[in-house]
Image (cartoon, rainbow, N blue to C red; front, side, top):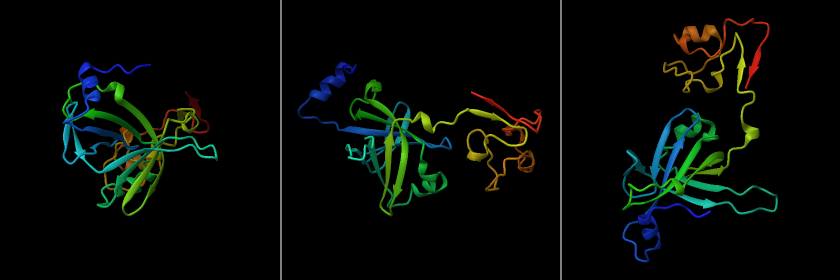
Length: 207
């Protein structure tokens, strides 16, 4: 199926001597809902009302392997400054993050680029002192939580993502046991992910 690009983008794509570079934008949504916007450029750019920070990275494609490994996209990001280290250590390598890649022309930033956009999941991560390498692939339904919610009276659903978007605790206590007492000690009972009204001797599942 042909891509539905604007006439301006088609003309820019077919231009032999191009004055404006084509840039890759990254929209990274980490498991804790932190949103990073980066561009492989020497300076920041504004696109869609958002500022994309200049950051060195490169994109490549996995090759088919004899062991039947499914090919995907490889994202290499500079780790020389250690800017990524805190995210990778705290979020287990940022596995399961969503990364949307958009290719844009620097001289035509107001055009519609929805046809030049694709979203991947971070499947695995390797880190050295100089590079963080992310293996990107399509979401795997076998990795999704099922059932979606477990209804327990004595345990919070959000404990596995403590301080995440559902829990939203911002205090200084670094861990949580997921109980009502833990939540009460943090003054965060309004966000408790358990169901105290249920019989504590059983549980319910729901899709």
